[in-house]
Image (cartoon, rainbow, N blue to C red; front, top):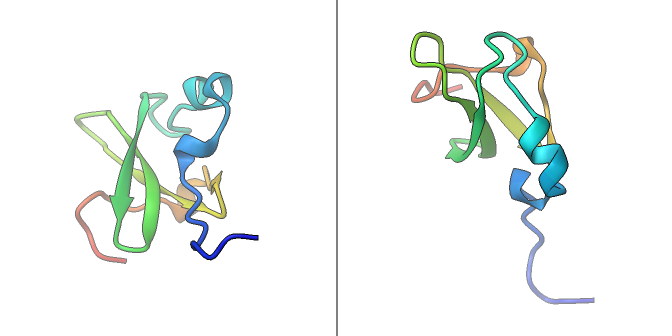
Amino acid sequence: MTDSPISPTAGDLPEWVRGALRCPETKAELVDAEGPDGPELVSTDPAEPLAYPVRGGVPIMLPDEARAPGAAD
């Protein structure tokens, strides 16, 4: 047991899984980012970027959970 807090991110996913993830709306590549509520994956689509939260190391790839990057929840 360690004294440091665990802060899971999308980077904790196996590389092959991380590389296969795409935005479910635009099919654009996703990049790691830090949002107002913690880690998230952000779509690289320039016309419709969306940010998906990462909770407990699991990306929540549901359009209803997405937000516009830069917008507060």
